[in-house]
Structure formats: C-alpha cells, structure tokens
Amino acid sequence: MTISTIAQTNFEKHIRQNSYPGRGLVIGRTGAGNWAIVYWIMGRSANSRNRRFVADGTALRTGPVDITLVENPELIIYEAMLEMPGIFLVSNGDQTRTIYQTLQTGGSFDDALLTREREPDAPNYTPRISGMLEPENETCLITLSILKANPANPVLTDRFTYRPAPPPPGFGYCLTTYMGNGRPLSSFSGDPLWLPLQGPPETILQIYWNGLDADNRVALAVKTIENGRSNILILNQNG
Image (cartoon, rainbow, N blue to C red; front, side, top):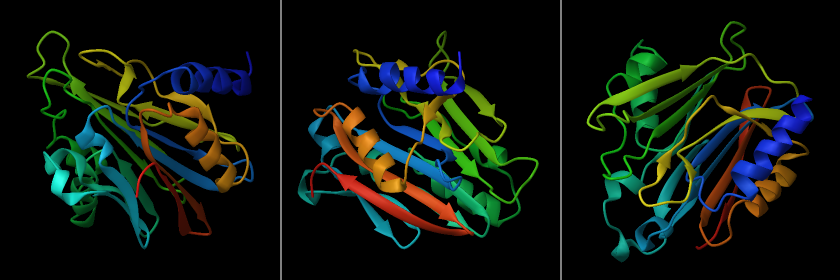
C-alpha cells in the first residue's frame, strides 16, 4: 500500500467519516514542498462551540464569539500557535505557552511537557496534543506529543513523544484528541496518522473544513512557512 493510499484512507476513516475526532493537528509539507501546520477545534457543548480563531500576527489563538456565554475559559481560551526564530509551535491548550516560555529560557520541548498533565475534564480527560516544527534542524524537524490519562488510573498521565522522519511533499503527521464520538470520549490511540496535504494552502483549508463534521466543527487554521516566514489562513463556523 502506498503512502498516498494510506494517507487518503486515514483521512476518510478518521476525519471525513468520523463525527468527532475532536481537536486535531497536522504537521507536514504541501505539494509544493513548503512546510505547513493545520489545526482545528470541534465542539459538542454550547461552551465549546462559542469559539473562533483569531490571528495576532504570526500567533493563532482561540477567542469567544459571545464573551458573556464563556464557561471554564482556562480550557477553551488559549494560544494555539506560537513561533520564534526557526521554531513553530502548535497545541490544543495553554501548553503552547508553556513550551514557548521553556524554550526561551533554554529548556526543551520535553522539559516543558513534563510540567503538564492531561486536561482535568473528567470523565473525558481530554489528551493534550502538541507539535513543534524546526524547518532548519536537520536532526529533528518534527516533534509530536500526546499526554493522556492512564487507562488503569486516570489520575496518572501517560506520555508519548514522536520524532518522525520528514514527510515527502503532500503529506503530514496527525494527532487528534479522540478516536471518535462517545460518552465518555475515547482518547486517541496509536502512532500519528499519515494524512494528505495536497494543493496550495487555500485548497488544504477547504479540504479539511469540508472533511470535518459540519455539526461539530468550530474553527480551522492552516499556517504555511516559506523561507522562514509564516502565513495563517482561517475558517470559523461562527463570528
């Protein structure tokens, strides 16, 4: 089976035919060979759906559509993408800022996440998914992490870090928070998934937006990096 077939099959099964993969990130390369980071949020509750993406320069954050309806802001309002020279970060929570600050003070990606746990939203215990892209680092271009509740004792956090080889143009590595819909939700399991990143950024944005469940999708962003400079495209369900 070719990587193209694997990636397309994963997209169909885990994204298009899955009503709730939850939040997700993809790091890879467009068909033209430029680096790209995709991030999306979904929601089942009114609180989760009361969000949109906002770009602040090179940073991406979540923001409320109606600030009067916000509950538990510590779990839904955060910086999803940050960057510093040669380093591009993405995550599904405020650990983006934790990683950024740790790197600024000489620590590592792993050091930062050792200070964090899965989210405290029992009974789902939403995993924290994080990614780092270093386009100029020949030994470690991509780092991915998922922190999730231990199945025997959800008080404990299982930690998985991946440093995959650079993908060929048109493909990326994906982590999502959940395997699918349910009560409680089932945490993502297995290695990062190969997914397609075909076409220019505008096409990637539309393909992923159309692939996500229309009733549960909330916002989607695609950041592309060319010659060290980034650009963000956004689609919001509301606002």
